[in-house]
Length: 343
Image (tube, rainbow, N blue to C red; front, side, top):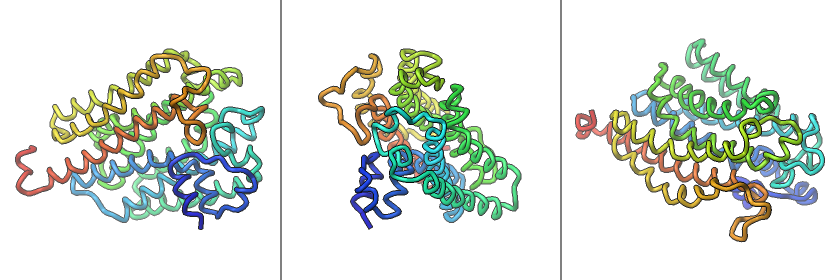
């Protein structure tokens, strides 16, 4: 058990040689293959769904645990399958961007195609088992079947064709908000709530900035390879300003939800994320530099990625405070002596 590698893989995308890879345990290999460092974004979506359900007295731990594990494993399956799809389509040839900033097990020769597909199959089947458990305990609710089907669709078809026709970013916006948070709430509370979907937007916009940032980082090479991500379609500058807009909107939406009393004023805790926004915001006003800035980290989650890590840092800062604020918000609403105050 290589606990040091577990911790590392949960924080960055490690670079490992073939000899190092061969010495790793299966969990370390799985964490690297699934790019586990980014799975925190899915955990926060599942946690938010649970908090909204708890707020409405509809929380149950075992279904929430199955929901959380299912979503994380589905995201992990998607990351594995993305690498396989790009590999078989020849995208990762000629030192493609993805192979530079972290281990890409199949393209780097760390795993065979069969081993890679085995990881995908096992991870995907575990995610499916969690989903079927939720269907079973909800008496085969057809809406949950539809949510499960939608999740499977995005797992299998995000990389191709969605990412290739400028729908990848929109898919992320739909999946991490309405599907994970709104759908997760439905699974736990047995009702659809558009207010919950609206309240998911401050967080999911941050998640979307991460994929936008990554696609801006790959803008030139994706254009050469005719991978029409949204930044390639709308242009690099428009994409950067779209990210800036999506970084500011979560604050405005949070203020709106406080004004409508869907949130309590405790959600103003997200303002403590402003220093991170202030730190990363100026970089998006200019094109990506040709060489790594001196104060920018190199490799393992850093350069040659530039905009993606900054979007991730900003989202992690805002998202963690948003989740913590919602936890306090829920507790305040459920305390007997404060319930009438917040109505």
